[in-house]
Structures are given as structure tokens and as C-alpha cells.
Image (cartoon, rainbow, N blue to C red; front, side):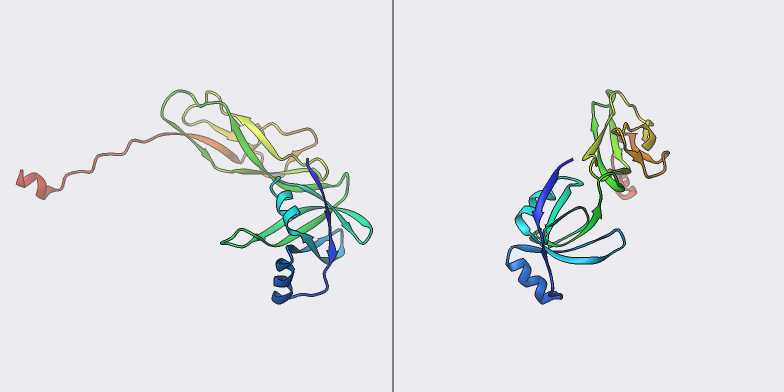
Length: 194
């Protein structure tokens, strides 16, 4: 689990114009909420935050007014064209606290020989983990699976201290037989002309 330190500043201006000024200064407007406290409006350094968010479920250590608080990203809004960060919602967490997060499901191994397709029914798995030990992803083996096989959420090995937060019988992956396309049927007009 990666922990990234960021210097945060309290934000007093709100609205579209204020947000644009913040972004022009290479910063990102954000809101921090959780633990029953009033939401805090802050700004974060844009480049450092962009780099931090490349790591799934990153733990952010926010330095704000002489205090350090831990937070995880809950919602990230990006510009649809340029991909720049527009706004970030952060959830305050404490060491030892359990949180629900989504982790990516990675596969390893090869399917059985033949024309098979692997369908990712769920690309992420919702799990409950300690806030300071959130896994970046989980890995499951698909070695030798044939058509009709499926992997359920309960079949995926989870790191120690992590539990499923979804139905354990939810299908995560399934193997399908590849279907060949049929040749287009000739129309009756073409066959009578011949």
C-alpha cells in the first residue's frame, strides 16, 4: 500500500470561477469528509496528486494547518477531453479502521487449448480492508480452464486481513466457447439467376 504525502491548503472561495483560478495555479480543488466532521474544502498540488492517483487505492497523508490526516480517494472527476483533474473527493480514515474499496482483478495463466474466450463479468472486486493495508489488486489463476468454467468471488484468494464486501457467489470470470461466424446465406434471387 502506497502512502503519499501532500501539502493541502484550506479553500475559502467556491464556485466555477474560483475552481478555474485554482486549476490555473496548477492545483486541484478537493473536499475531505468523514468521521462525522463537517466537510473541509481544500486545494491540493495538481502534479503530485495526478502522480499519486496512478496507484489504485492510494493512501494520502494530508498536511493541513500543522496536522496530518489520512485519506483515500472516493471520487475523481477529470476533464473529458484533456484528462486533467477537475475535482477530488477524499474520505478521512484512521489507522486500523476498515473501509470498503474496489480492487482490480488480474488473471495469470492460460486457458485450456482450444477456441475459448475469457469474459470479465466483474473487473473489480469490492472488499473490506484496513485503511492502511488496502491491496492494489488481487490475482487469480485461470490455468487450464475450459468452456463453461466460472470463477466466483469466494474462489479468489484475498490478502490477509481482507474480506469480501459483495455476494461470495457473484461470478467474476467465466470461460466461453468461441463461436465461428456463419457465412451469409445467399438470397433466393441470386440462386434463381444462377
